[in-house]
Length: 113
Image 1 (spheres, rainbow, N blue to C red):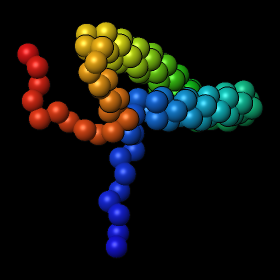
Image 2: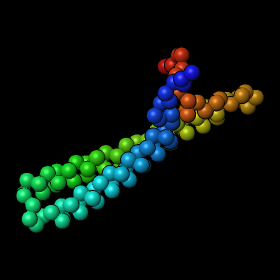
Image 3: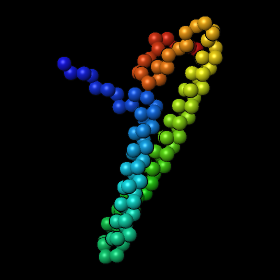
Image 4: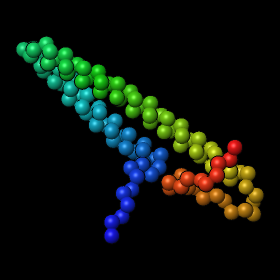
């Protein structure tokens, strides 16, 4: 019996972890590319050096986008916590507290407007 494939990101935290690993990999690639640029500036065809500079530039852009994405995920996590706390504050003291379904892929049947 085969199990269904799990989604890559089951929670905001797992997406943050992935972006952290990706950021580390991009940083290593940027360092390697810069080392190649420094080593190959002398004696290599200019076209090759320019291609390495383009790689470096695109890795820099990717690094920037990853940092922005990590900030957005942090904001979403903070907002989720605030909204969850508001729901707990509004619930009557004798009511059962709502479950935190944020780590599950549960979609509500109806949305509040």
